[in-house]
Amino acid sequence: MEYKKKVLKNGLRIIVIPMKGTSSVTVMNFVEAGSKYENKQNNGISHFLEHMCFKGTEKRPSAGDIAREFDSIGAQNNAFTSNEVTGYWGKAHSKHTEKILDLIADMYLNPTFPEKDLEIEKGVIIEEINMYEDLPQRLVYEVFDELLYGDQPAGWSVAGTKENIRSFGRKDFVNYRKQHYVASATTVVVAGDVDANDIFKKVAKAFSQISTGKKTAKKKVIEKQSEPAIKLRFKETDQTHLVLGFRAFDLYDKRMYTLYLLSAILGRGMSSRLFQKMRDQLGICYYVRSNVVSLTDHGSFIVSAGIDSARVEEGIKGILEEFIRIRDEKVSEEELRKAKDYYLGNLYLNLESSDAVADFFGSQEIFKQKIKTPKDIEKEIEKITTEDISKVAKEIIQNKKLNLAIVGKYKNAERFKKILKV
Image 1 (cartoon, one colour):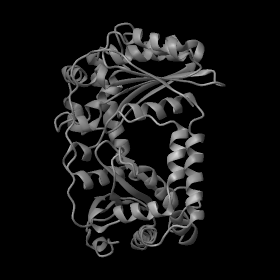
Image 2 (cartoon, rainbow, N blue to C red; image 1 turned 180 degrees about the horizontal axis):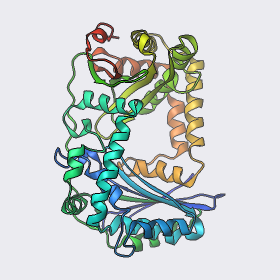
Image 3 (cartoon, helix red, strand yellow; image 1 turned 135 degrees about the vertical axis):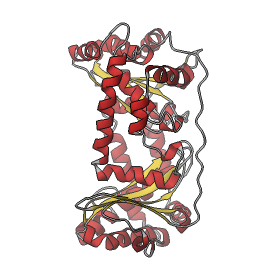
Image 4 (cartoon, rainbow, N blue to C red; image 1 turned 60 degrees about the horizontal axis):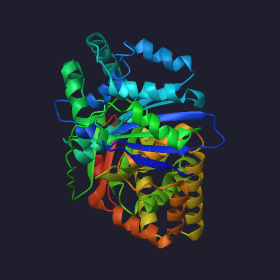
């Protein structure tokens, strides 16, 4: 899978991935804006701004106008906001390439932020926040971030606070957008049934009016920890939801692929160590999985699970035992081979659609990484040895990096402090 890249004089980056055998095209617009670019007073504005870009432009004055144009060509479209990135995308038949490009560019460049829609959308976002509060298996990830990073942007919710949402006015969006939605912080990715040279010209034209202002930077994350830490969020739940894990590497670290394989062995798939132990042997949970979280200046290696509340200590001990085992006992060549095949299999399976391909390449470029194709990644994965796995496990699985977040019917952390060690 080959890609072509062009950087315009204004700093706008364009990535094109021609895909044979598909009739679709995806236009995906990334910008360096998210909760880590916010302050205490405007936390939540990146996500709110994403919503408001769907509410109308000069060319398409209402949300209904935008929606009708997407629907009229049978397109799929959506947007997303995370800690460090906001994205807007549309996917359609390739004969509608110019239309989908025009729609995405117009939403990104020309939102009008109608006052009436802004006030209505406040209610929508507050209910979105309420929805997340009612999803403990999601909420526990926010509690974990609060535990690791505290009162700094990396520890805040992407959705923001209800108080902030209620306080925002039109000027807040205009000013924030001016600080961040600039050419040098924007990447446009087009993947599918397209010709690269043709697309470069069309993207340059569609985004010709993009701001060339200076980008406002984010503050570097501060990390401090010397012993295991716990954070509880009391909630009436039928099971205990937890995230148990360690501070790890940022996304530029050369050991990231080794950590991905370590995660695959520990808790990815139904044959992983944790799934076999926690679900098939102990019958203590329905879901248990490991994940690698990597951002520009921090990261974590975590296990999440929903556990029988009557057996929560047993569940925590079980997870910790597997952390200790993978740190202290060398992984077999057979298990490493399985982890590599699992990771690579998922990598290729997840790149069968134009939107997935656009996300794959754009997610690398927006963080100014050296873009790696699937084949490049495969070569990196195949180099990893059992010794590499052991070395990374020992580096990460330490008491001074250990953290536990819990959502459930608990108010006293002392019962968990006794068992929280590796």
